[in-house]
Amino acid sequence: MYKCCLFDLDGTLINTLAALTRTINLTLAQFGLEPVEEEHTKIFVGDGYKNFVKRAFAFRGVEEEGTLEQAFAAYRRYFKENCLYGIKAYDGMPELLAFLKNRGIKIAVVTNKGQEQAVENIEAVFGKGYFDRITGEREGMPRKPDPAPALYTARALGVPPQECLYLGDTNTDMRTGIAAGMDTVAVLWGFRGRDELEAFHPMYMAEDPRDVMPILEK
Image 1 (cartoon, one colour):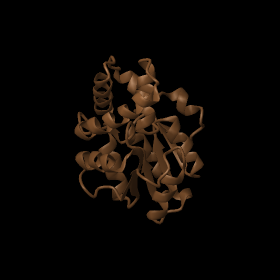
Image 2 (spheres, rainbow, N blue to C red):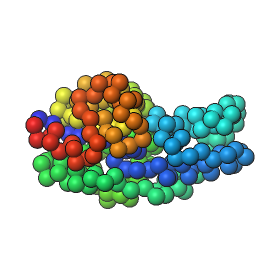
Image 3 (spheres, helix red, strand yellow):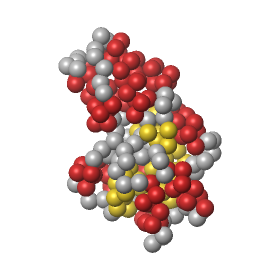
Image 4 (cartoon, rainbow, N blue to C red):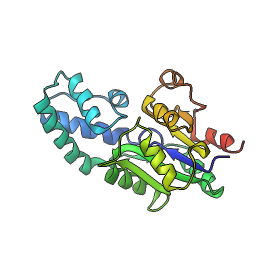
C-alpha cells in the first residue's frame, strides 16, 4: 500500500505553461530575440531554469556563454515577477489530492523549480500548508533526474521509497522515480507525449488525475 505520493510541479500538479512562456519571452526580448510558442516551452523545460534558457536561446541561434550568463540573471528577475501568471491546477487534480488526504496518504512536491517559487506556486493554487513537503531546487540539493530530492523528501516524511508513488510528466521525472526505487506514474495531461514517457516503462500511465485513484485502491 502506498503511504505517500510525490508530485512533479510544472506539467503535473499545475499548468504553469503561460508563466514559463511569458518569462522566457521577456528574457529573449531583452536581447532582441523573437519569442517562442508554448509548444516550444513544453519541450524546453523540465530540468532546471538554466537548461530552459539555454534551449530557448539556442533555438534563436544564441549560445555564447557570456550572453547566457546575463540571460540567466534576467530570467530569474522576470520569473520572480511573473511566476504566478496564469497558473492553475489541472482539471481533476483537486479531487485527486482530496482523495489522498481523506485516506491519510501524504502528499509532497519534488520539482526543479527554485524552492521559493515552488512554494509560492503551490500556496497560490492550493493554499498554505496543504502539502506535507515541498522540495525545490536550492543549494546543496541535486536536480532531478538525480533521485536525491525524491529520496530526501520520502525520508523527511518517514516513508520508505517502496511505499511511495512518484508522478511526473517528462522523461526527467521517469528517470527520477525509477532511480529512486519508487513506483512511477507517467501523467499524460502535462508537457510531454505518450511515446517519450512509455520509453521508460513506468509502472502506470494516467490520462487524467482521477485515473490515479484506482491505483491507490489496489
